[in-house]
Length: 142
Image (cartoon, rainbow, N blue to C red; front, side, top):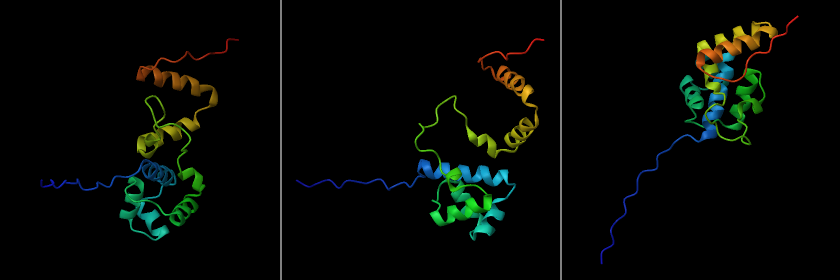
């Protein structure tokens, strides 16, 4: 009996979740510092294409390079590494990718300038527009 040759599917290299999360954190902090991919690349001695691959998670960031990136961005290496103790992102949890968009950054920066006593009202307004029902804002009555 002739044995059939098994066809193997070629191994498809996909980024690991942690590599994607590290890349997303690099992107968030880079954008917050108003650095372009080219600026970051020059400062750490790689091409901007390499920074793109780091941020997408398609290339892993070596520990020494991660240290250089963290130093340049003035953050701790821990800030770039995701918390592996928490469960995977589920619906309803915060998606920090919004901070990588210009609108998300503008919104966050403007929100930080709003007086504390007004922030609950803004959150309630945004939740109402989004169709999210949570709780009513408690107001002080004199």
